[in-house]
Image (cartoon, one colour):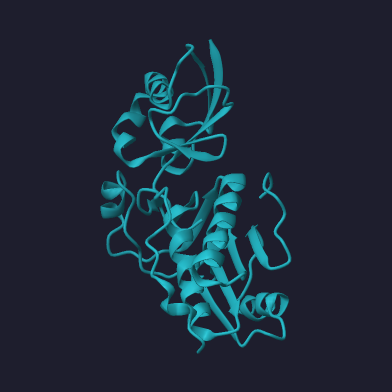
Length: 262
């Protein structure tokens, strides 16, 4: 028998009423075997099977992947984007999860830290907490309907810290390969983010503007689609988790046009 720690986040954490479950699994067990064992203990998780993804020891894994010697399985609910355990960022990239607040001034701060004398473009994006609600995550439709017509009071972000930092690092690698942009920053809040405050910032620095614009857009789109960072919209008498099923692979390559000398 193998012993496996299963970590739960966001919607699944609330349904099960716990952040962590210990399972004993037979030799030859797969990720799906672990899910079935988890559902035996917490049947309320079963309806969410279609919408979750899995990660073994910090890397996405298919349902048929053998558990092997892995020590941790993370159940990844629909993400919205959003530590330790990953290599420290190099001098040409900044990857951070922050509990403390920041303002739009972070664009200048990050740009000044990254830019060199050869760079002619600094492109930044800041995402803020807005009062209008977004699209509820699968399984949250009834709760969202209960708050229909109301304004959002705040956001709450939860993350799988080490895995999120590792995936953000891979997104930065992809930006370098696809757009030739090696100086990039992705900074995401965790915890409570009041209305009107910044929740995420990306900055891309490059000699030419087209590549910087493309890199910044790719950074925020891929962060929201792939990073295990979950967002709940808080109302006066409850909250709604928002987002879509996590995408495991990079988005399509837009091609080399953005690398032109402009």
